[in-house]
Image (cartoon, rainbow, N blue to C red; front, side, top):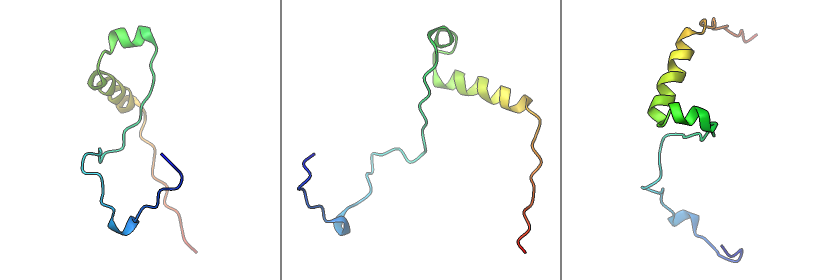
Length: 64
């Protein structure tokens, strides 16, 4: 894109085709990809691991 474009941001609109959820891309090794060949399978496995973790206690911060 040229640096000399002058965009009128007052007339701009949100991209209606853009994904509204935040997505993070993580590269996995080839041997892992053979077992987990879809993001749904990866997410399911990671959620199972997360549920096995002990719950962290929420610390309340005091504002003095």
